[in-house]
Length: 266
Image 1 (cartoon, rainbow, N blue to C red):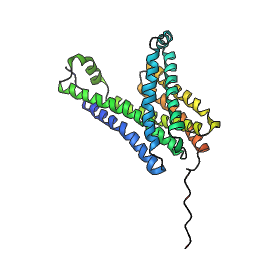
Image 2: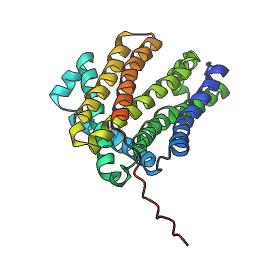
Image 3: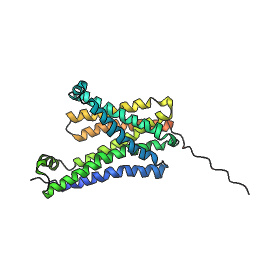
Image 4: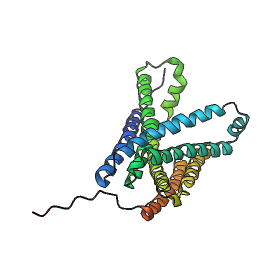
């Protein structure tokens, strides 16, 4: 196999793989050490994402595989983008709602736990989507450069060798934006669960999630400049971050801490 994956590409793959782990670990330590968040919300987020996004959502797609309307949706990029975005929003935000309403019912005294959950939800996605993918790419890249790759995978080797090294760093930029979005949406759903008068934040989170995903899907079909796509996604994610900050500041209350018994006077 006469292909060679550039050394710089391999280095950037390693950086991206490590970044996918460093992002959630860094956020966990930040919310835990600086703001006193509980541990459980982070781990619940790590569980909810794969169950609802990689499990239930994919089962729904499999169930629709042979439906006539699904074939029509796939043939139109705009319909597909809107549908895929809504599916992601519906399943992931419902997962968030379930996590807050049921699994974290006793942890709602600290509003920082909503952000801690978002770090887990978005963080595990970074590990699964970016870190594991980069590790897989690295293993294949080493086999290609060593000349031990399966000849039947020559086309994949050519594709990997032809990717500009900087492209692997784009995945880090994309994941940072995605994690920021997940934390922001977690804030919206958190207060939708805590305050029935704010329930409208839950469907809003679904719509915002769907919008971001739909724009990314549609633009990927028509725009070749990946940085332009990331800029559009970052713009929408930025709107979500600003909205989350406003909602958090207006609704957050001091953590409920049990009062310590008064000291006895000798």
